[in-house]
Image (cartoon, rainbow, N blue to C red; front, side, top):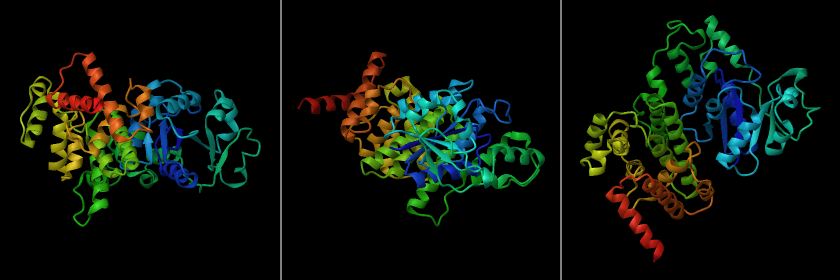
Length: 413
């Protein structure tokens, strides 16, 4: 997969950022853009207005259901001032892109690139992409740029995060300069000096994706709307780290489904919804899971948290109207697996276990994820998971034991 990196403060994210990302996707043939919010920019140390988590949340709320874009919190996790060279090394290590990743820079930064940490090494590791940010006679800072680069012939949008912050602070017109998801968070959290009641923000819940799907939408359109609703719900109820894991699972499931000729949208929905009930207490999990007509196994009674998979499957059916058996199976079986799993369920299981933000994953499994057939990949990931569970002396469910025994039998036959 061809990846490009677009970093920045995103304080806040605005339509110019996403417009630029789409220009790189369509103009240079990248498959996915990784948006990386800085914890603290070395060039904007005095800029405040929103916490790192606020900025992360605004980004993730602005791209629901779009698998071409992802958000990585590596610089926020590192804290302090992050340098691009460190971020590039981490992204290459975890994402294993096809060829060199792209690094998108605005031409307003070109003149200072030589002052960055290890600029020559950066130029060796990535394809530098210079996007147009400056208009007029000052728009040619690349004439003396000494590093190999590509120029992105994008349109210039005259909007900046500073402009948005100033308009919010002064009560000016700003709402359509940012994506809807970011707008609702700014208003809800009173960011950048926003004063509640300065304008009608009615209809926020529906616009944020919690309303029921339009009755006249069917097929792909209805599925896309459901994905956006579920993703926004997951972002609201899950912890930041759990939501990041869920979206990365959705993205990897999408990628695997495309590779194996499965319905990628179904994989994305199952991935974004698989941990939707992780925040619930034990009583609520038991009540919701038992609505599928089954009781609790001995292991589930000992460890009620395992019921989150069954509960999420029930929730997706009852609240969001999802009845597709492949999606429901993928969610139900993502924790312990089950005998005779279908292809979509296998893809989601693999995505959950080795997505890019999950720590402690054997790099060999991620390598395998790019080349092996689905059954081989599932078998290796499953066996690796079982081995780790056994090393921790965790009792395995009856279904899991049956599946492992069947796999061993097939492998030895």
